[in-house]
Length: 140
Image (cartoon, rainbow, N blue to C red; front, top):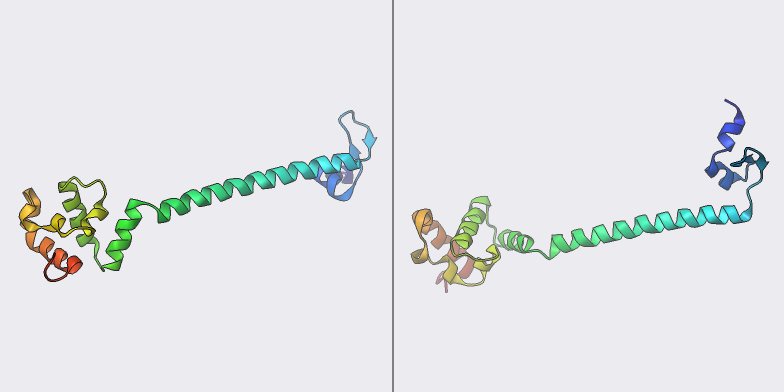
């Protein structure tokens, strides 16, 4: 390979001002205007990548910190609830047709063992224990 092949790459010409072959196949020097155009293109590409990364980061941040599932997980973590307790709370929320499972943390009535139906009625003692943990010994 001849050394001219390497120096005829556009980036090499821009960075080092090397002489290369133009589109017509003749030697020409790169002008200042062409360097400015290449630098502007590079700047636009970098700015577009940065803007895209910023937007993706904002969407992930919003999802991570402003979602119902994150709120539910955070409340369970604060109260020291394990996987089984979280699943039970989600079942209770589903039975009461709550739009968001985190609502079971707002009022003790959602965890009233008397209001449980079906398979959850067999877990009334666990629900009562959760109610006491979340709302105190009186559960009110």
